[in-house]
Length: 405
Image 1 (tube, rainbow, N blue to C red):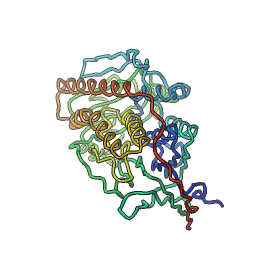
Image 2: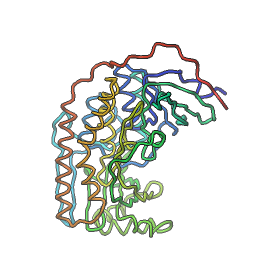
Image 3: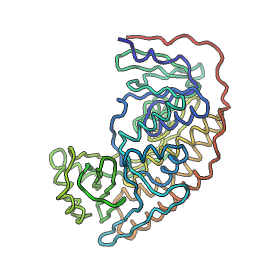
Image 4: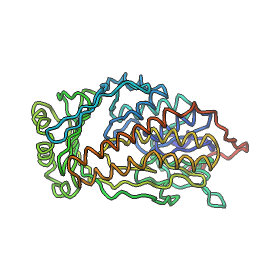
């Protein structure tokens, strides 16, 4: 049986560890800029992952800019043309007004969105391989990252060199650990969440429900399913584990969204309810000598504001532009731009995740969040068409990958 690692070349211009939203998008954009890119992911191609699925305007704008929105639409994922915020008995509907090339939002399942991005990366010339994980970094005499030792699911290994290794490998990023990336800002709060997918539930757009101490979201996604989640302070969820999740889910629904709870009586739950006990947000330093971080590897915030995919797509473009420029000053600029676009989103999310608010404050925090998202869209809309990469590729011939196992 041929080892999966034998498919790798010995040298690339960039190695991306992780090939989901952030990693596949970064690989695609770097390849479009003319770089030789390898993206690897330890998971099976097309596998599912925890996600709120919801794309905000900035995320849809990116897919429009990249020429991929038609592929999302072709999956049958419904167009979202309004978001309704429910504060106890008050419902505030916010229409999605056509502008910035966006006339609707979407919330595709990750089993559909991630493969679309992977296919686009491959079409641009990137090599994307699943079933391969990062084992170690290759370092030069100065300690600079100069490549990676990669390990296949069969235990074989390959040594691959590149001027930059990009960690897009999630909150528990191995790249971040290996480069000892410092955490520069920490969130103080996290939500406990239980979510499930329902069929036979008619939902018009995004719906977000708030009552003191609890929150609920209903997100229409692919395959005529609706993702319905309930959120609360983590101790309440932990008290219900392991056997009381179903009862807790119904209790929170009844507290925050009684009409939705009643509608679920005629719907069908597909599979089991899934709990997520929460992780406090963080912002890590996201670049250094020969390395960079993108997506949840560099910046994570609680899912209560459903902005994670939009973050990932935004930062993929900011990072790809910096890497293609070939300078460390550009990488520092990437982090500065990421932090400037993220700070208020991060702080508001952390505040909402605390559940230490009344409904008036919840409304005020959502207005701050909306203004921050508007600035984010302005940033993305103002980006010029990317120039071709200026990175000078190494000319020397390197040895073939060393395989073991």
